Amino acid sequence: MSSTSIQPSPSARALQDVREGWGQRELWGHLGWQDIRQRYRRSLLGPLWITISMAVTAIALGILYAGLFGNSLEEQLPYILVGFIVWGFIAGCINEGSEVFIANVGLITHLPAPISVHVYRLIWRQVLFFVHNLAVYAVMLIVFPQPLGWASLMAIPAFVLLVLNGAWVALAAGIVSTRFRDLTPITQSIVQLMFFMTPIVWIYGDLLNSPNPSIAERARIAEFNPFLHFLEIIRAPMLGADQHLRHWLVVLAITVAGWALTFVIMRRYRARVAYWV
Amino acid sequence: MVSIATRDASVDFPIFNAKTRSLKKTVLGMVGGNISSEDRVPVIQALHDVTLDLDHGARVGLVGHNGAGKSTLLRLLAGIYEPTSGTAVVSGRVAPVFDLGVGMDPEISGYENIIIRGLFLGMSRKQMEERVDDIAEFTELGDFLSMPLRTYSTGMRVRLALGVVTSIDPEILLLDEGIGAVDAAFLEKARTRLSDLVDRAGLLVFASHSDEFLRQLCTSAIWMNHGRVKAHGHLDDVLRAYKSPEVA
Image 1 (cartoon, one colour):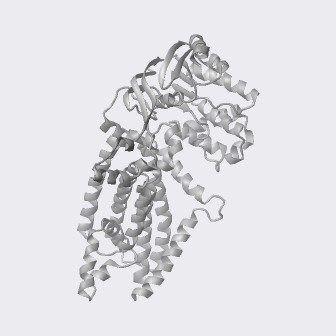
Image 2 (cartoon, rainbow over the protein chains, first blue to last red; image 1 turned 90 degrees about the vertical axis):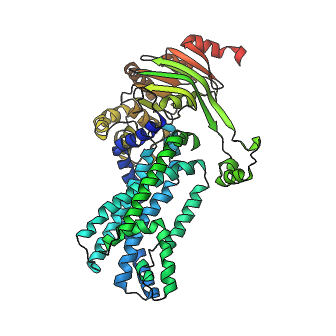
Image 3 (cartoon, rainbow over the protein chains, first blue to last red; image 1 turned 180 degrees about the horizontal axis):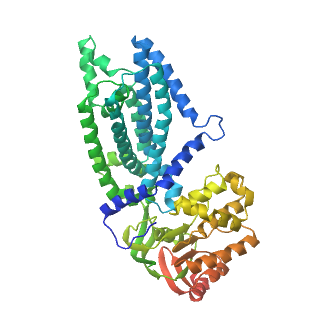
């Protein structure tokens, strides 16, 4: 496992950590499943509760906001549902990422393993949550059919990008917030706030095309919100809506920049995590 | 080739209190530009300039008072702590046995815990499944292996953990004391199995306060004192020096 014959450079060690962590797929794959089974152990429906609670929340909010905004239910509900499922993944990666090493203090100080193992486990768990929630999406497609086509397959690379970004955010936020413990609550508050600032319950296109020009003008500010782009690249194909290249370009740029930043953090502080936890 | 080589390896722990660990303080401190020495993070030097060469076949006991650096040294050798200065090069597959409870999930069965613990130690699922029978036999847990771990007594957990680690043929075995909660009969059995394991393992480092246990497993010893290697030599010589009254 930890077999080092020469002293590699910090950069090589950072890469080695990520690579060896990936090599321990059996471990984090198992632990990720375990986490989900654990949460619903001894409950009758088990992990089906993930699906049920998502369905209840999305339907209730769909009905509420369809009424408030005066939209039809078949427009509002699918929009909220898909937005909610995707947001659940994004928020899970960030919130749990900011305490991923703090939560695993026992394992980190007792067993030699690449620190990336804990991040892989977290991301895998979030992927599994996402897949459970896709069941709600499938039912929704039956009740409210969407104009899906070949372009809808873009949801797959979009999700891959979401996963790649979730991984660097968890790794970077995990390391930094292990050092600065205030960052975990700060991060979680920001994520909470971003939920309202991102078009999840409110429909972005409707505001852009608002008859009131000042609302349409203000809606454009949302383009500065990076989460909007992440949501758009996957929600648009899942709802068969028009897709825009600019969202993809922003997400790709963030992916590259984010991993570059994370690599710098890994190179500099990876070995300190065991000291800080 | 199994070996451990450290050169002037030091391990310094920063001790963050709530003040220094907060981002606010760091930011405000930078803005104010007035960081007095009182605000500096205090550091505990857990290990200081440790230079060691251990080769295949070494069976080393670690002795020293509480807080002398035994556990930290074991963690350094396991690769958990990378030295803050100096180097530590460990070649070989390491199996650390520090805290027998870590990595054990109380809600899942003993059988599943065996698999997970093996995965943590770098084994594959298949390799662990091949070893389950052997572990079941050694631990004498029988039907309890299919019960959740929370139903186990402390001694039963120790049996399980020992069963796993002694089944995986590590090249470097790092043992920290804490194997006390088992009954005498099992302890005897565990010692035999540990001795066997040590014969097969390339290298053993064992921290213990029990002379008897040390004599059974080790040939040489390292005496740690205040984070430094105070003596390193033949087990009896080191033990004699350690026990001699003038150092107390």
